[in-house]
Image 1 (cartoon, rainbow, N blue to C red):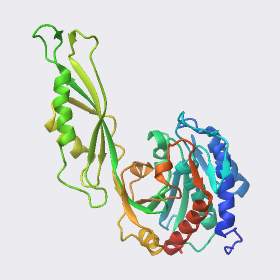
Image 2 (cartoon, helix red, strand yellow):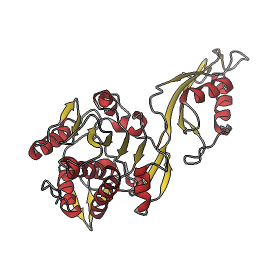
Image 3 (cartoon, rainbow, N blue to C red):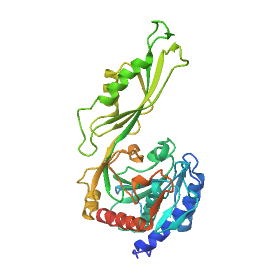
Image 4 (cartoon, rainbow, N blue to C red):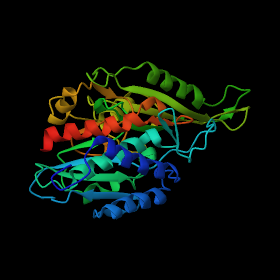
Length: 361
């Protein structure tokens, strides 16, 4: 028990988290369609008697003894999901417990992390002796990097000293995360009849640029994230077989490390290819936290390892040191018959609590 009587055993907290997770699984929550799961999280806090705020489908709450003079820790994860792929053999919206696993859409990504962070927040909620404030944010649209998720409420939150972003990492410490650039490109040519020596084939120009993209290596390599990775993932050109195409469109997926700004990466690419470039956004920037940060050291003390994550999460939208970690395994995300082990949730809650106690008590 805490001083104020809050349930404090990891097992009891895990049972609470699992019950909430089962409710979330049972409620469809595709990105931009999270009204139902937002209502469930509202109901959870209402039953706790915990005040909260809501904007669109984002819910956030402050610890009872919030003090604007203290630094603030943000606990964040998302309640939206991708759509189930056709390979599911189970009902994705039916929470099924079998062989110590909880199956269901969003169980691993990122319901296990979200529910574990929610009950961790509840554990600290009414403690008057914290050195830091604790804010819990359950947010929307993470799976599509949408603008009506965490980004929508960042300005409503107090200044954040550091954040824990809940994603399945086997409770290891993702101390850095690649940013994401999506570049839409157009190679321009001149149309002509394919049977005659006419026109300039835009496909051939695009191929030259794509070959450069495929082979180019940025000189600076991140010690935690490795090299920048560029992949051409979409290409489209031509209208009929006998017309030389005057335009070829293609898309580059660029995973950016902490060694370059997004603007620097765009500049290097633009200087080396002839195609026209348009960035969809420059919002999803690389993120990191020093290995010497107290929250990272607290995790290392528990035997967890540090690594750089190649995937992008809501970390990209937070302008502060942030650590990505949570129960579950990244390789299960977006897969058919997604699941999380029940023991992963209990162990995750225990680790979140121990790490935070090292820093805020």
